[in-house]
Length: 87
Image (cartoon, rainbow, N blue to C red):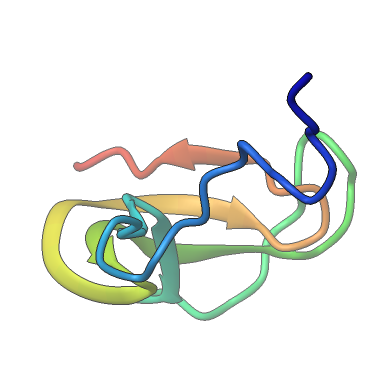
């Protein structure tokens, strides 16, 4: 009879076999343009401001390539947003 005591079938990973690469496309906001506060239509707080919304391609939390950018109205309290209309 074969004894299984002390023998393990689990495989251990060494650092060469396991590579973790974290990528993402987060959106970052930056106040831009008109700095006066406006009333939010959703939460009724005076916390709406004009901002620039920019989506970045990032690797390991380091922003590398700006992908998309647009001007928006943004509420800092309830996170309501709408694109800024030109004209």
